[in-house]
Amino acid sequence: MSKPTRASDTPIAVEVEAGTSYFWCACGLSKKQPFCDGSHKDTDIRPVVFKAEESKKVFFCGCKATAAQPLCDGSHKST
Image (cartoon, rainbow, N blue to C red; front, side, top):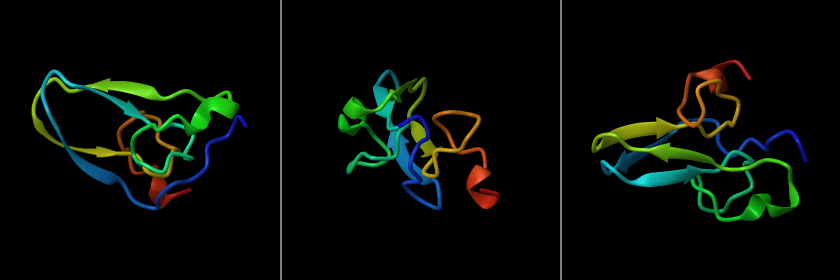
């Protein structure tokens, strides 16, 4: 598998905590969207690390088509 599976048609809002690292699911197979649960193990796709610089709400990509991995760039509207 080299192309991700679309996990959601919308971004996924998450309150992140400053200094914490999050592992965004890039393959779309995780049951814990938007985060990795290891489901990529049989693919060539790996999770993307996001380190929160401040505590705030961010919007992780759910469609897996974003050019701004791991955050939503609106790609779900055109893919």
